[in-house]
Image (cartoon, rainbow, N blue to C red; front, side):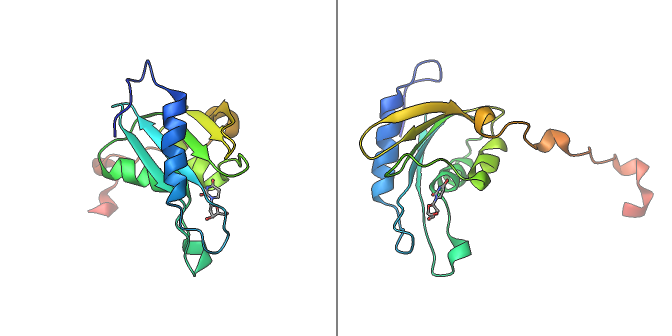
Length: 148
Ligand code: THU
């Protein structure tokens, strides 16, 4: 799916994709249906829904479904994500950190079933975050003879 470019994109279109993705949610245990739509810098939109499992911890959130779909399709830079639930629930901590891996900042649209939404950012939801920049760089091979 394609949207308009990074400079000019339509929040309502992204929310609509998230709404449609929410209809595909597999949530027989929590009955809490979540849909997400992630806009890549290419203009492509990657949707995701929550996919639960009888082994509860194996359940996957909608946002992470969308990220995995996008990255596995070759897209690693993102502009915005829309997340739609019944009541405008916020992305969980695990999803915030997963999004942080691929974006310094990101526009986040939080929508509800009534069609209302509000806009925030990843840096607001995950301030002072940990990222790859915090990891010490791997020493060059020559300085670590024991690795050979
Ligand atoms: N869920 C999401 O899909 N995204 C979130 O950010 C929060 C929670 C899902 C996981 C589970 O299927 C259901 O909502 C209830 O926690």
